[in-house]
Length: 443
Image 1 (tube, rainbow, N blue to C red):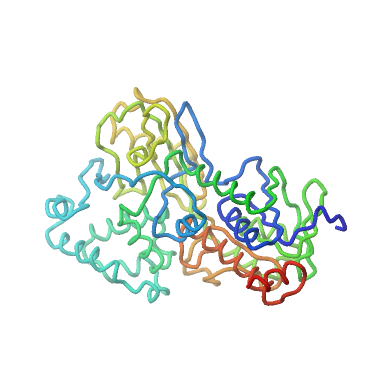
Image 2: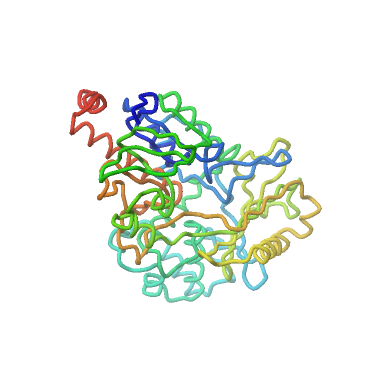
């Protein structure tokens, strides 16, 4: 590790959203940063794939304008054009498509609910923004719902809305507070955005900003080992190259970070790996010349964990006006059969848009997408993992799984900011080495 050309202040492993944000923050502080991504393209699950002129994200994606990620993107000056999703939709219930009670008028006329149920749903929706979600840190979503909601259909609708906002069908493990906070965000439809061109527009701008900030980005580089003796010494890459680096941010899944660290059994990494409960999904994306049923842009499964949305209602996702419709079936880890899930999603599409196959110009089916690698749940011993690995000085973690109450992209962004902030604060406080002295002076 004597080669100074391979020496950096910090290495970031993983070129998804979390890794890119960490690299930008650290490089902007004046540190020498290298980002390593094993794929030949950055972005991870934020990549966008183009097929026949249509742009498909890797699974369902929505940007919450009040979320932690968008706050960072605004700080960076990113341009994120697009629009909100459709607010009016239908439910999927017993093979029928009843209108969802989205507004006051729809609520009053909904045939899904009894009159007492309508009153209760209105009460729950009114109460939601005022909830002290921090106080709901020791009960599950199911426990909260069974305590607060009497009407079975109102409870069923609440579960469906929570599932749609968190992309997670589990109601027994998730801690109620973070789920309800995410639900409240999702009900502000004017504060949700589908992005023109897909999420690749985020990745491309983050990459360019990282490079302009001075970070080195190496794609096609797989890390074999995080070398340490209780403190990080450097990285050994799969091709045998070594990097001399005293600080590492791993933006990988907990299982992958665990695998890279010798004697990880004796660190917090073991618990983070063992406690992780990934949320999974089967995703079907379709590009259609037009919708067979005009105006039918949104559907939420009430008796099954299914969601469908015409992303082209809010965003430009094709070159010629084709409509990009996303359907998802939410699964738990180890659940789901690819062939069966594809059949279920296609049947749902036929229910929504009969004869849709005649308009089809592009298709993408992702049978086992990881929505997130973990979330705040009752069996997680460390409710707020990271940013530092306590037993290994100089090792930090980030990613959607390192949530302190955030979900999805917001968890990835917030955890990356926590990791970079911790490193910058520690170096400034120590004031040692070139980087520490520069940060201390800057501070």
